[in-house]
Amino acid sequence: MSDIRTVDARGLSCPQPAMLTRQALQKFDKGTVEVLVDSGTARENVSRLAEKAGWAVAAEEQPEGSCRILLKK
Amino acid sequence: MSSISRFLTSRWGPIITGIVVGILAPVLVKLGNPGNMGVCVVCFSRDIAGALGLHRAGVVQYIRPEIIGFVLGALIAALIFREFRPRTGSAPLVRFLLGMFATFGALVFLGCPWRAYLRLAGGDWNAVFGILGLTAGIGLGIVFLRSGYSLGRSRPAPTAVGWVMPVIMVTLLVLLIAAPQFGRDAGGNPTGPIFFSATGPGSQHAPLLVSLIAGLFIGFLAQRSRFCTVGAVRDAILLSDFRLLLGVVALLVAALATNMILGQFQSGFEKQPIAHTDGWWNFGGMALAGLAFTLAGGCPGRQLFLAGEGDADSGLFIAGMLVGAGFAHNYSMASSATGPGIFGPSVVIVGLIICVVFGLTMREVKA
Image (cartoon, rainbow over the protein chains, first blue to last red):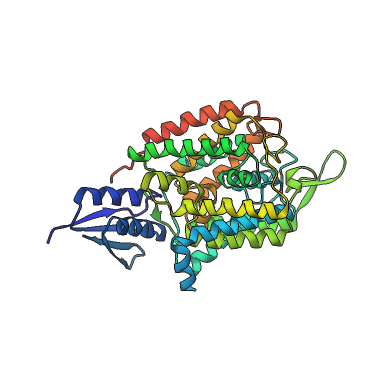
C-alpha cells in the first residue's frame, strides 16, 4: 500500500483545483491521491477529470464544510 | 429537487442553461431590451453605473433587473443546495482592477462574452472579431495559468460578508422601483439621484417583472450548472473538458433559432444594433476582456453567480466593473456606433500591459 499524496486545492479559483489534480495524477500515475476542495464546482471538476483518466473517485464531506476526494488507481 | 440538481450538475446542465439563455435573450429583445442585448452583463452593469450617476452618458442609464436576478437567483440556488459559503481574501484589490479592465475592454467591443455570442446569433458578423479576440485573451491567460499564475486562496468569512452583494442587489431593486428623482435639470424636469435614460439603449427595456424573473431563472440554473462563457473556452483548451463549451454552443444555436423565429436575425457588418465595424479594436477590446476574465477565474456572469454564493472576491470584481464602466464613459474610452472612443485603443493597450504584469507576477504565497 503506497502512501497517500495530498493536493490541497481549498480556496483556489477555477481552473486551479483541476490543474493541480491533473499534475498530481500525471506524476504518480497510480496509488492513492487525496484532493481537498471547498466548493461544489471544484469537487465536480476534480471528480470528472479523475474519472476520465481512469481513477476511482470517492468523495466525503468534511465537518468544516470542505470535501475530501479520494482518487485510487 | 435533488434530482433536478443532479441533472444540472451533469454534463447536461450547461446545455440546458445555454438553451434557456439562448431563448430568453432574444425574447427579452422582443419585449423591449436593446438589439442583440437580451442579456449583456457588462452593458447592463454600465447601465446600472449610469443610473447611479457614476457616469452621465444620458443614453445608457437604467437599473437592469436581469443583473439583480442573476445574483439573487444564484443566491436562492446556493441556499437551497447548501452551497452558500461566504468567503474572501484572494487578492481582492487585484480582482477589483481585473473587473475594471475587463469592462474597459468589453466596452471597446460593446459587449461581454455573453453578448458577443448573442450578437453573432443575431447576424452581427463584427462579433466574429470580438470572439477571436476573446479566445486570444483566454489563450494568453492559459499561458499564465500554466506557468503558475494564481491569485491565492480565499478563506471562509463571516456570514455577513456573503450577504453584502445580495443586499446591494435588493437595494438596487428598491431604487429601481422607487425611482427617486429629487433633483431638477436645466429645463426643470425631475432628475437624480437615480438616472433613467429617456432615449437610447438605456430607455429600451423589457417590463421590469419579466426581466427580473428571467434573471432569477438564469441565475438559479447557472449556479447549479456552473455555466461560464470564459471557462467554456479555457477548459476546452487547458483540460480538454468540453462540458461548458457545449453550453455556449447550445446558447448560440438556441439564440440563432429564436432570432429566426422572431424575425430578429439580420446578417451583415453594417448598421448592427449598438455595434461598430472596427475589426481591430473589436478584437483588441475583447482580447483584454478575455485575459482579465481568465485571470479572475470566470466570465462576468459567473462572477455574479459566485457573488450570489457568498464569494465576496467576485463581489469586488463586480464593483470593479461598475466603477470601470463609470470611468469608461467619463473618459471617452467606451465605443459608440461610430467606432472606438478617443481613448479606447490606448486603454486597451495599457490594460493589456497591466494584466500581463499580473499574469507574470501573481503567485501563491506559501504560509
